[in-house]
Image 1: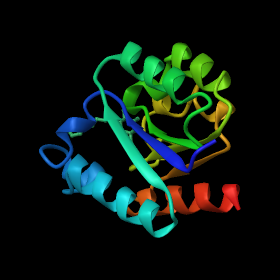
Image 2: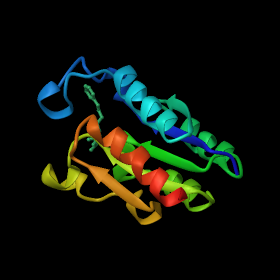
Image 3: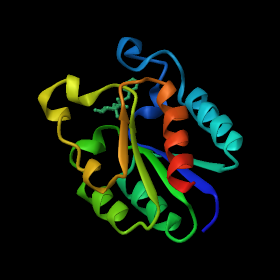
Image 4: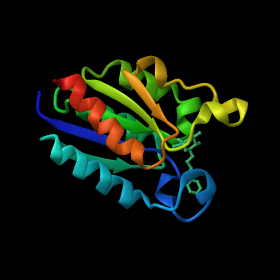
Length: 145
Ligand code: CA2
């Protein structure tokens, strides 16, 4: 297994920084990926990133990480709450899984309180905005040590 970490973002997260800054902050997706990459490199890890608005792309990226990436950090966006295909793909993945959210979905609308990702994640980091990316990489580093 390599020291590669795959960072995945789901639908609409490419719009970060453009709308709803009161919920998601003003940083762009590019800013968050840079934060994660800096943290990963500091931990001796290599970061790969994919954002997609298509569920199947994310499923295929998870398949492609099997036996190749040490960990997946995933913010599935709204797919968090209903995408059982992501649940099943992550269940078949052999590395560390960290679920990451900018906001705290548990403190928002009731439909956001269910995550189909949490049961197949090693842990979840929610509600810490952009700082969550450094926390997620630190969680991976700790699990690998
Ligand atoms: O808090 C998070 O990170 C979420 O994963 C963000 C998702 C939401 O559906 C989850 O419940 C929690 C929403 C992503 C939509 O992102 C936008 C960004 C800018 C403008 C509009 C939407």
